[in-house]
Length: 264
Image 1: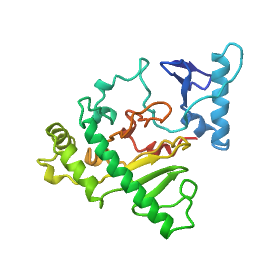
Image 2 (image 1 turned 90 degrees about the vertical axis):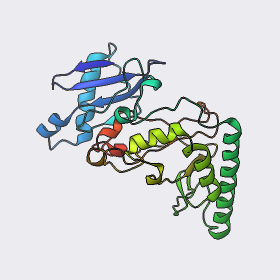
Image 3 (image 1 turned 60 degrees about the vertical axis):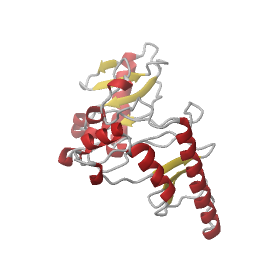
């Protein structure tokens, strides 16, 4: 991390990727500056402050803007530790994500899931082509209660009414003692009978673009504690070619950046 103070006593934080050394995000605390310069557009204030910091930080005066996120949120965004995250040490309460390192599903069970999901996807897309011929899958924007387009070539298919998938989740996942214990602890329940669940499959077709940062639910954390848990189960071997799901540990603690709506 670099911490560079400028004349306005603000701090520019450049977080370097631990593997490549490349900057992955630039965050600028500009709240006080904005209050003093209310007539100046926020975008100009951000660039002006960043320019001052970068000119001091870069020897050859070359300004390079390469990052995932430009943030102007009044809260301090949670940053990745200098040495990176240690998956085994992440906790749901503190970080908003926890890895289950023991195998939950065997390879035959994963294959069974994949077969059922592929059938559900094929049936749903066939119905769309039959009943909504104006929709071009992969190009059109649409949203039904059963399926929606999350972007070009990316879809979210709800399977709450899909009996085969529901049965697999109950028999292969929710029946396992380690999952039952964790869910009841996280959700403050005395039995699995108090827990309801939905099932969906998010799938992308070749050529799909990266999905933007977002949250999967409303922010109620300070009021009710943990009220829902998303269990992510990859159904294929992930790689840089297929793409990964990224999580921002610690970002569940405040609604100020929920969905990163305040990000410029």
